[in-house]
Length: 81
Image (cartoon, rainbow, N blue to C red; front, side):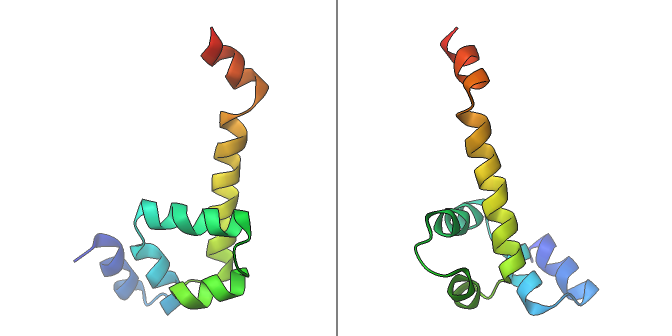
């Protein structure tokens, strides 16, 4: 059993949080990209993947921060050197 799923059941988290805890990094990334690209409303994504909107927004903020860090001018200079 997935450790996150075990902890989820043990702590009696709500079902949306439990589903979010079991998502793989690639699934989280895909959801974050869908939120960032606005392919469909966040509410629809949340329902479809049984996750809550707060979780999806958190993932999209993390993804956006990573993109900004990767493409910031200071990062480009250090990579070019």
